[in-house]
Structure formats: structure tokens, C-alpha cells
Amino acid sequence: MKTEFAEKGDLLIVGWGGTYGSLHSAVKQMNEQGFKNVGYAHFNYINPLPKNTEEVLKQFKKIVVCELNAGQFANVLKMNFNGLTMTQFNKIQGLPFGNQELIEKFKQLLK
Image (cartoon, rainbow, N blue to C red; front, side, top):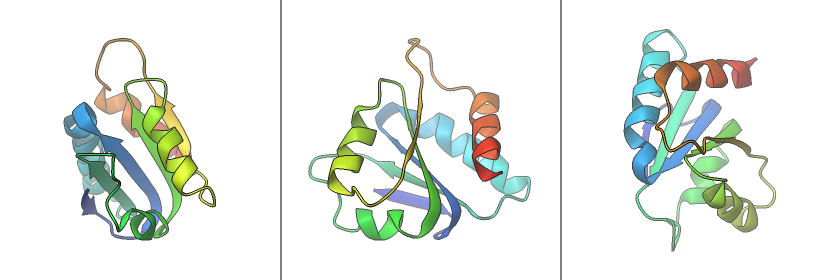
């Protein structure tokens, strides 16, 4: 798992696989806009989960798992860490996430 931006804070963006570019770009743009309490964790593999996964997740008030499917990875995380509340942001259209749609969602979650 690769973590970037804030190491603890208000919102952790979680992604895996092909979501890296879109999510990284959106979080970077938010960081440049002054949202310094937003972190990003990208998983290169999900089985087994990295040993520090729970430690990283617990550093944030809110967690959003962004996936280009119905939420299979969010379900894996919820099964392994059932004490943590996670929001899902899924897109099942055969298209990547757009920067603006991600930023709007993340800002909405920060309210």
C-alpha cells in the first residue's frame, strides 16, 4: 500500500488497481486548494492486505473507498475491519473517474 499526502486527518481516499491516476490527481488538486487533512492510500494488491492497513485507516475520521466496480474491495475492508465506518464511491460505467466528480464527492464528505 502506498500512502500519500496527509498521514492523519479528516478524510482518507482509498483506491486500488486502475484508479491510481484519477484518485492521485484529485487528491493532489485538493491539497493544492488547501485541503491538507486529506490522505490517499493506494493498494497494489489486496490479498493479503498489507500489515499496516488497519493502522493507516484508523488515522482518519472518514474513509471513502473509490472503485470502478460494485464495491468488492470495500467489502473486503469492511469484513477485515468491521469497527471502521467506510463510505463507498462506485462507478460502473466502463469509464474512469473524472477529476471534478471526485473532488465534488470528497468536498461533500468533508462537510
